[in-house]
Amino acid sequence: PRLIHRGLTMSAYLQEIENLSNLRASQGDAWNGINPEYAVRMRMQNRFKSGLEIAQYTADIMRQDMADYDQDPGNYTQSLGCWHGFVAQQKAIAIKRHRGTLNKKYIYLSGWMIAAMRSEFGPLPDQSMHEKTAVPALIAEIYTFLKQADSRELNKLFRALDKARDDKNVTEEKRIIDKIDNFESHVVPIIADIDAGFGNEEATYLLAKKMIEAGACCIQIENQVSDAKQCGHQAGKVTVPHEDFLAKVNAVRYAFLELGVDDGVIVARTDSLGADLTQKVPVSRNE
Image (cartoon, rainbow, N blue to C red):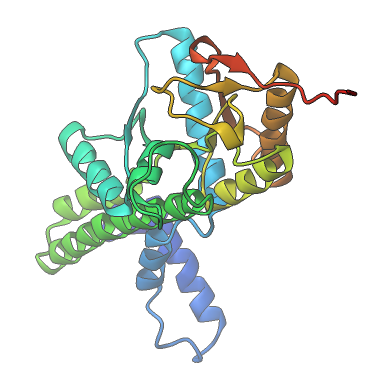
């Protein structure tokens, strides 16, 4: 039989309180100062303990969305660029309030926005001249703010629940507990731009690891020459031979596999149609 609490069928939230109540009781009098419900609320407000947990959680979302799109192209996703964690947070909160859900809504972390807004050298064009560490740093910042949105919105529900109990309004209490049980996180997938990898395949692999550890489930990479990289809207782009690009794509996949995010997503972008030439092969000439 399911446990009953004040006339309510035991929910996931109430079940977790019951579990922690039993844990507290098992400690004798040592934990008498601990309120199990407060501890449960803290757990819910800190659902994701690491960036890797976020990467796996969002990779699962993205893979399901991709499958949904394959079944029906009307099930498309939307991604908006964000250059600061606060911007991402307010975007997520606003969309969820307006639409009631963040389903199929992503964040796009664009290389050109980092170059323009986050470089210590000041505003730069999209030519990979900004600090490569700015990319994983922004991913971590965005997810810090999105987790804070969860904490803030859950706290509103907890306060409303306390008020319903004070008012002895069982109907309202049940309604709020149901909302707590079905709370949708503001943590959504990030499509993170790694430009052309900021170097060779080893450099690409190392940076991809940092991005995944920060929470990225999807990494976008392009087939330009790293040290000659141009904005996608500029002329003068130079692409690498296919085997060089595939080596970088594989480097990103190895990073995902090493960190246990086996279903991480790679967007392999080509600038071949807009490129003036492919990377020159160095030769020696005897005079």
